[in-house]
Length: 297
Image 1 (cartoon, rainbow, N blue to C red):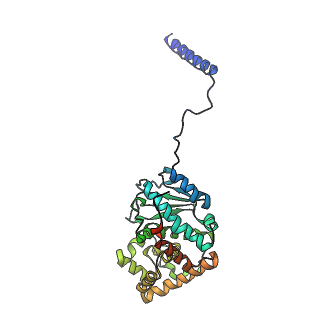
Image 2: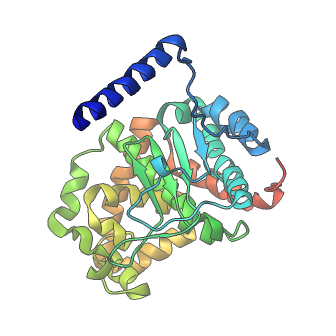
Image 3: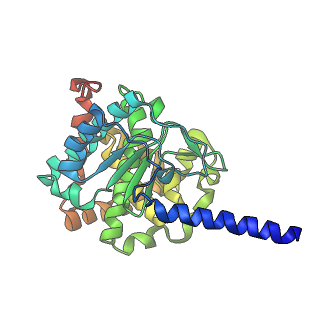
């Protein structure tokens, strides 16, 4: 008898519940609302200077979906993000505009997103990740909170050599470079051992050069070798380049020169970009950084 009462009581509750549901129509609007992001002056500047002319999104806020959870990362500082956005526009996008005669080249081939992260990212072997590119769609730049806008060498090391490097990947993935390039160093690439194969510091730089690689990282794979030649060449002076060739010596210099001849002709014949003109334009813009107001939007 007791069990029957329990069952009846439950049945009555269900009857009352469904009766209430039938009497009151459920609202079609969700009671859960997402926090709305307030657009600021920088957001509007990005639309005007990146999205509209180049179809590029410039993300400076930390978003889980865009961040690599393999690293412990922090968001980019707002002021540093503004400065870097202006520098990328001036030292990279506008440079290609001048060399190619318009904005279409960047619109067609440059990654559609630049993503900033405030802190450095480190691999398990202790090497710092300067930047990453994903399928030609996004470039992520790390260590933004430490940017020194007046130090051109630091800007190139952390950001602009990386940007030219990753952009060159997109270009050769779109239109492959000659297979003859792959035959020059052949089986000499050291893969993930590049950070230790040549020693450390300046000794590693010298050893890699003498082996025919413009940087130690260039020895990791043939594609990295190809794009490192472009990135190093266009972000440095002719005097710097010649100093690298001199250090490479009688063994490494002929190898690097043979590779660079293929790189130079590829960029000219395939993309109608003269790397000498591109470098001169990059250097001209570097020398004019002091003319920019990097803080005012």
